[in-house]
Every structure is written in C-alpha cells, then in structure tokens.
Length: 187
Image (cartoon, rainbow, N blue to C red; front, side, top):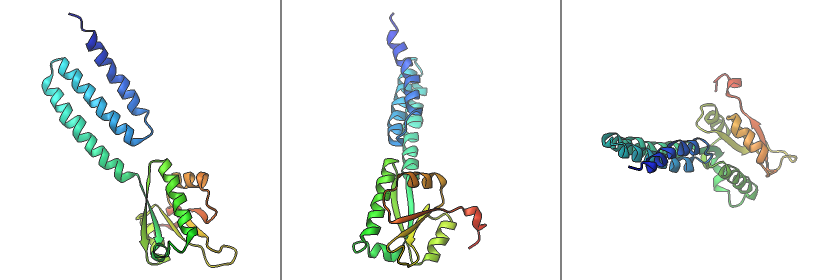
C-alpha cells in the first residue's frame, strides 16, 4: 500500500507551525492556528487515533481559538484618557480631531484600536494614568500663546511611546513618557 499521502499530511504539521510562529498579524495567526489544529486532527484520524482526533478538534482547535480570539481582541485596545469637554467640542476643535485621527492611523498599522475614555478633570486624568486605567492621556497644554491649541500626550507604556514618537505627524501634541515608578504610586 502506498502511504505517500500520509507523509504529505504529516509534513504539513511543521510547515503550519512555522507559519504560525512567524505571523505578525494576530488575526492571521488565529486562522493559521485553526489550520494547524485541522492538520493535527487529520494526522490523528489517519493514524487511527479517533479519540485523540476528536479531543484535538474540540479542545485544541475550537476552544483554544475562541479563547485566543477573545484575548487578542481585548489586548489590542489602547485606552486614551481625554477631558470630557474635548469629546463634546470635537466638532469645533479640528486640532484635537486631527490628533485623534493621527493616533487612530498609527495604531491601525499595529492592529490596535483606540478607545477614548472621558474624565471630568486633569486630576482624574492623572489618577487614571497612575492607577493604570488608561495607557495614555491627552489633555490641553497649559494656556499660553506659544502652545495655543496644543495637547500634551502622556504615555505610560514605553513601547507605545516609541511607536507614537517615531510615527506621529501631527504638530498638535507634545509627547511625554510617564514613568509610574517616578510617582512612587502616590496620588
């Protein structure tokens, strides 16, 4: 009996595993994880281990992909704290809207979503950053003619700060890395 098809199916396991670990886009990785599980199910079924194939199909493929999808979806959100009045006046303040659009385009390149979280004062915004409720804050810079309609963006995650610093095109913000250790965890 010619079992060459078996060797081809088994050769797909390391091939799909290699593709999985080299994926940059987490959503593509989820699809390839499903393919890897399907190939593993085929190998187990062809080798006569129907119980292992069924377990792999149900637990290893369907359940793990569902859990990974939930984890990926929730972990790719950047929470940006803003002053509540800014959201209300967004239509009138084109500089703020331009800055937010710039942030959205930067994060979409990195497969992230931007979620705006409103706070009613600068102190609440600062506390949210310290308490790690948000990843970054964006608030109007202190009123001065030199910085008219300019915003200060404080970011507590070094990698996100590096991404924004290298890709921001809007002149409407002053970036600042916020090191939580410098605050001593005090409000």
